[in-house]
Each structure stands twice: as structure tokens, then as C-alpha cells.
Amino acid sequence: MMLSRTAENLFWMSRNIERAENTARMLDVSFRMALVPSSLDSQELHFEPILAIAPGTGDFRDRYGEFTKENIIRYVVLDADNESSIWSLIHGARENARAQRTAISTEAWESINSTWLQVQDLDYQGLVEWGFRDFFEWVKERSHLFRGVVFGTLLHDDPFRFIRLGTFIERADNTARILDVKYHVLLPETEKVGGYVDYYQWAALLRSVGAFRAYRRVYHDTVYPWRVAELLILREDMPRSLHHCYEALITTLEDLTGNKQLECRRIAGQTYARLKYGRIDKIFALGLHEFLNDFIDNNNALGAQLQEDFLMTPVSISAVA
Image (spheres, rainbow, N blue to C red):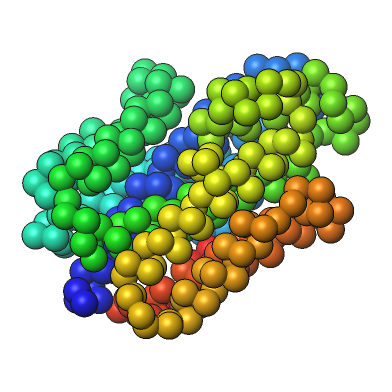
């Protein structure tokens, strides 16, 4: 087994990169949704739910006060004091990679280091000149490039497996959060469910996780909330679905632990069974919000247990969230 410090750095390197991509996706969909006429009092309210989705320090109101698009973008993209801003996440991933340069390939290091060099001095004016949506697309592309380089140049041994664990735990968390917030926050109460605003919001959510074309291919129909939920929760072949993420986690943990029956495998197996054998009508009958909240709690518990079983410092569940 590799050193726990190496495992921890690689685990958080991949989580940071994945979270940066997810944050860029959420910001991009907020820009898309702000263009759609709705009963929201202000376009800025399309950006406020990001603070509920993206984990962070929770001190936005104390430091910035007013919920404006500019303030939210400063906080979520550029703020070095916000540990979950895109700037901080890329910096953190780069530091994790720098600490383990011998455990990753030269190409993987160069990919993440060059990404950091392009954002380290970025300020709000520079972001405006870059173009918000062009920047978000760039962040997504750099994340895709990094994962591709990792897959194509690293030995598929324990370091590679810890990178996969970090990626899929983070991806599952993001998919659950954005689906939950859309279902309960983004739809104005005065809008009719199934109306054109509702359609564009669900379509924007699908685009935020790269699933709009996949939805069309699977369902050949208009966008319905229960089918979006089914695609993003239960479809094994959807790369950002909860089922797909836990399929990858289960396989990776089996490869990593062999015959050892560690607690992290039990937690992952419990959650995986609910996703593998779940039905979307039963999930809606019991409450989508309740199902997703329970999933997020269990996913956080798995992250904390991985810290306990493999990594340097055990952490509380809240610290993983």
C-alpha cells in the first residue's frame, strides 16, 4: 500500500479539479438561465443558488453583503480566501500535485501547473476581458484535459485509484446538489411546473452536467423533471449520474482493498445498492429532496471513512461536505 500522505494528496488533487469544473458548470448554467424571462425579481437571483450548491466557507454575506452577480462571481471564481473558489481549487490541486510529482506523470504535472499559471494573477477585470462563459468553458476543458492525461499516462495502480476515488465522490456530490437545488430553489413558486420557463431551466440543468444530448437520445421527448432525475440518479450509462459514480467507486475500492472488508466498502455498497435497484417513481413518492439529502449525507460519510481508512488525518463528515 502506498504512503497515506501520497494517497491524500492525490485524492484531494482530483477532488479539487473536479470541484473547479463543477463550479464552472454551475456558473455557466446560471448565465444561460439569466437570459430566460421569468418571474424572478432580478437576474442576480439565478446566481444566488450557487452559494447553496458549491461548498465554501459560508461567509459570503459577512464579506460582500449584497447578492449581486459581480459579488457572487468574485467570491466563487476569484476569492483566494474562499477555499472553494475556482482560483483556490486550482491552486490547491496544483499544490497537491507538486507534493507528489514522483507519483504522477510529467504530462499530468505540466497540465495542472500550466492551468494554475494562467489563473494565478487573474482579477475581475481580466475575467471580464476573457469573457465569463469563455472562462467557464476553459475551466471545463482544462479539467477534461487533466483527466485524459491522467488516464492515458499513469500506471493504473494505487495512485491512479485514489485519483479516481476523489473524482467520483466529488462528481456524485455535485450532481446531487445541483439536482436538489433546481428542484426546490430555482423554479419560482409563481411559475407553472411544465411551463416554458420550467422547460428551459431543466434543459439548462442538463447542459450544466453535459447531459442534454444524452437526455434527447434516451427519451426522445420534451424535458420532464422525473426523467431528468432518472437520468442523473439511476442511469448507469450516464457519466455524471449517481449510479455511474458509485459503480466506479465500488470497482475502484475492490481493486484497492482486495479481500479486506473495510468500513468504506460497506458504506459505498449500501449506497450503490439503492442506486442499482432504485426506481424513480418510488424516489419521487418518498420525496426527491429527502432522497438527495440522504445521498449527500452518505456520500460525505464515505469521504470521511476513506480519510479514516486510508489517508493521513481523519476528518469529520462536515469537513468533507
